[in-house]
Image 1 (tube, rainbow, N blue to C red):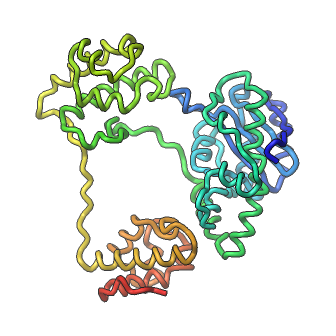
Image 2: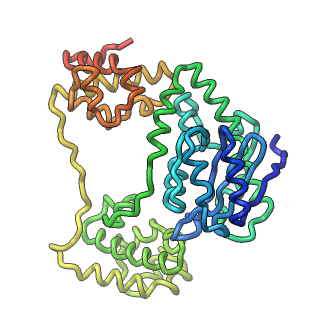
Length: 390
C-alpha cells in the first residue's frame, strides 16, 4: 500500500469548483484536510484544500480561486459528515480565510484519544491501521509555491484519502465501547472554535525562558522581539526565520552595546550581524535607557489557595479520575482535566442539577460519570480522598 498512487482532480477555476461542489453536496461523508504556509510566511493563509469522497479526491487551489462560497452549503449541511484529523487548526483557518463554518464534524484524532491510542498523529495512525507511510520530506513544504510538483500534490491527496475509511473504523470501535456520543459532543464544540488574532500582551510571554529574566533583561528582550516582529511583517517571513528565540534571549542576557561585543559574543551569524546588527544594538541601547520604575515585570499568576475542604475534594477527585481513566484505557486529562477538577472542588456541587452549572463539564461527563464525581467529592469531604472508588 505504501507505493500506491492516488488519482485526484486539480481544481483552480470557479466554474470547475461549482461543479465539484454540486457533487460534494450529494455525498454522505467527506474527508477534509488543508495545507497552510505558516512555516514560510508571516501572513499565514490556506494554500490547498483537499476533499475526498468514497470514490474521488479533489485538490482545490484557493490561491487561484479567491471565492470558495460554493463550498459553504456543503460544509454547513448537517447531513454530510466532515472528517478531519486534528480539526482545531483547520476549523479556525477555514472560517478565518473563507468564512466557512463546519457542521457535523468528526475528528479522527479526538476519536483516537478517546480510544486510548498512545500515538494519535495522522502519520502514526495511518501506519498502524493501513500500513501507509507518509513521506516526511514534504511536511515542511512551502504550499504557497506555484506550480506544485506532482509528488507534492499526490502527498496532499493521500493525506485525506484515508480519512473516511479511518473514521468508519474508529466510529465502530467507539460504539462498541459506548463512547461515540462522547466524541460527537466534543466535535460539536470543536466545530465552533474560531481564529483569534494575537493579543496586545507583551511578546516576551511567548518566549520560553523569559520568565527567568530580570526586569532590565526583559525590557531588552521585548525591544528585540518588537524589532523582529516588524522585520517579519515587512518581509512576510515567520519571525523564527528572521531571528531565533534563543538568540534574542541570549542577547537580552548579555546586552552587547557595541558591534565588537556583538561579534565576539558568537550569538549571531555573520550574515545576521551584517543584516540586523546595527538595528539590534540600537534597540538594546533604547531598552537600557528605560528608567527603572518603567521596567516590565514578568506576570506571576498566583492561583488562590484552596480552602482545606476544597483541597481534600481536589485530591479525592484526582484519585478517582486517575483510577477511572486507567480502567478506561485513556489519558486522565481526557476524562477530567485539572482545571475542571479545581473548579469542581471549589464549587462543590451537591447534585446532578448543580453539576450542570460547571462550565466545561459536558453532558457526556455528567451522564456517564456525574454520580461518581459527586461520590468522589463526598469522600474527599470526609477526608478519605485516597480511598479506591472502584
